[in-house]
Image (tube, rainbow, N blue to C red; front, side, top):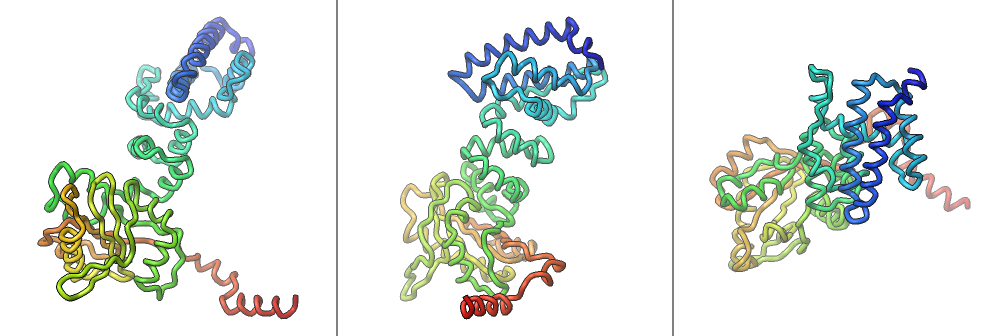
Length: 356
């Protein structure tokens, strides 16, 4: 591609139009910074894609465009060659299935734009770099808008596979909850839960897991999702002449109900559902207020047989779900041999204190 191609009349006319639109975007940005700027980015990206197809401009085109726009708008940081490439990639991601149309033109999908401009540019870049398709990407866009996630929280949610895990637990919600509440509750439980912030031994019991989760309560609440308010652990309830203790008790501020979480470090057993049903009844009778919705139960197990769970929940009248949980992944076998054992570390520690 020659320099002459880059400065032909078609390019100069388009550049002039871009400058005018960029000035308009600057004025509007004082009132509506993010959405106005991203709308401009979207239109710019669509133009870049289309003109690269029609005008056959080569790889030097974006560098030339970046130079011209930065010269005209030195205070705007979004016109680097790298960011122009990202803008182009952003538009292509949401219109990938339309790029190679028979007419040779690029039909840009407008539908998601109203959602995309509601979150910062940096969040958009995280989403398209980590999501496999548009459906998954828009899921995270909507969740970011709904919960006002920071970029680090958004990254964590994507990397932990929230999209794949939400609403996948085995539950009896459809049989035990009214429709207005059902849709919200269906999204409440994940499967599995990822407690990758914990390091527990294989011999750890329910109390060890319970303590570890409450010691890391902020991270635990992040994994549970928005709306959970911590009430307490080992919450005591008296039924008849006996005392019973709930592993973890929360209140969900959006669902307006208590949530009982029971922890099991082994495989799910049918009797666990009966005991959780008993706890839900006790909370409804003793703690639930007149304006509260029915209490929900979540049973977290290290493993579970889906069919066994479905049988166990089939005649339960209280709403509950059963999910698995995952802890920090074990080290690969090929690395274990290269790391010191606990005994070696203790010996080294003792020697260092004897010989300072």
